[in-house]
Amino acid sequence: SSYGDAFHKDAIESKTFVMLNDPAINAQLQTILKDLLAVREAPSGIRYSIHLIDDKQINAFTFGGYIYLTKAMYDKIKDNTDLLYSIIGHEIGHSEKGHIKQTIQELELSGKLFGDNGMTYFQIKKLLTGSFNQRNELEADYYGIDLTNQLDKNLCATVAFWKEMAESENSYNRLEDFFRTHPFSGLRAQCLQDHIQQNFSVSCAGR
Image (cartoon, rainbow, N blue to C red):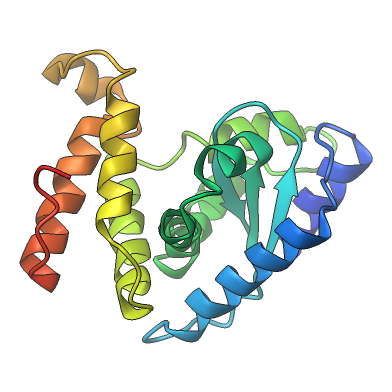
């Protein structure tokens, strides 16, 4: 989208992050993106691209068809290609399920999208990494895992990843969960495990 183009251009010009041009990694990410887009059931007309950025936070986010994966995230999961598929599939899900479009509409209504008094790249990035509610996040998780399943990848790799991430989080607290945008990793792992069991008859329990 034009907003995605403007966001990407601003991100580069402001040097808020540095694009990493590693030919081998970029080729791998392009292949994964192409594979995932090819198995969408009702593909949108969104033009996608994927970019590796120099960032020490373990993160991935998307805006207007541009998907960003931090080097820290890549380094953490680079030896697990199946997991890379579901993580990138999750970001595709945010666009295909309309979460990004909804976010843009909300920003337009509030008058905060670019322009003289618009949000900076840093503010938009912060919004994108925490703007979706838990329902959006789980919906994107399911979308990503469904695409990954169509490519015959190991679905339980994603469950194992979120279980590992959960070990560094606080124990489940309903009140804190209510105010938290993203689902706790433990809850995320459980929801994905249930989704995989119910839809694909694959048990990830104990893995």
